[in-house]
Image 1: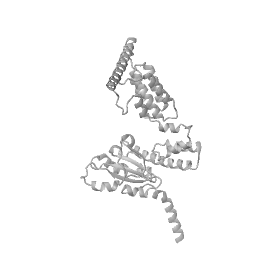
Image 2 (image 1 turned 135 degrees about the horizontal axis):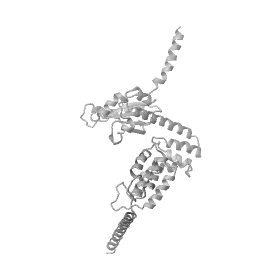
Image 3 (image 1 turned 90 degrees about the horizontal axis):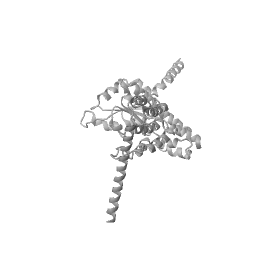
Length: 344
């Protein structure tokens, strides 16, 4: 009888193990890291003395079974970020936070993700990622999404470890493409496995759409010079080349092509041609932000009733040539002035 009862108790305990191993809670970030396993740590950042919604969501979103289920086996911790050091409770904030970095731009509420070594691999905030409802069901989905991405990354890296060549590179490339930060050294390992970039993964991850656009606009920081004049034909050629490179991220290709679309509109090209460019962006991937924007752009820019007359186009070309000539003359005068000073 005793043995049967013991066996029954062990069976019940076995059924409870998955629940016991579900997301744990910790009081501090340091404590969370100590307890962390392969699913790492998920931290909720809130502002007790300045962001009432982030405090409200502690109960309706963060401290709920739905959030715990989404976090898998991660350790969950709520970390306060006070605006005023004199606010009630602020004296304990630093001990709770430990060495955890602040959320990006100090925005609260923010959910941050760390692996068991303390490396931050993802974060999200705002209604687009948390949702506008009190339960933040969009946020619950995103917690699950990033925790699962970490699991997948760890699985792929483990499979890749004993391999060499393209077989290894394919797994590393898949790990690099996940929507979370890459672990240190991953790109170096990928370059060693695929030195000629046959898979295109190295090119994909090294390409920086923002820096590409800065170069096209001749600016180091995004602020356009007053006398800047785009070389439309060269810009179009460069953008088309990037857009056709299917090894690159879809979003990067769309961003670059949108740069060309904007300049095309400034060049007053025909509305039908502009519409065709915009539709190309949508066709590549209608689900990205750029893809979703495309139908609106078609309506705003691709269906313009007014078309430039031949005289208006001629006047626009002449004005452009005059501006370019003035720019060229100014640079020539600056060079001559510099040469004269050096001679003296």
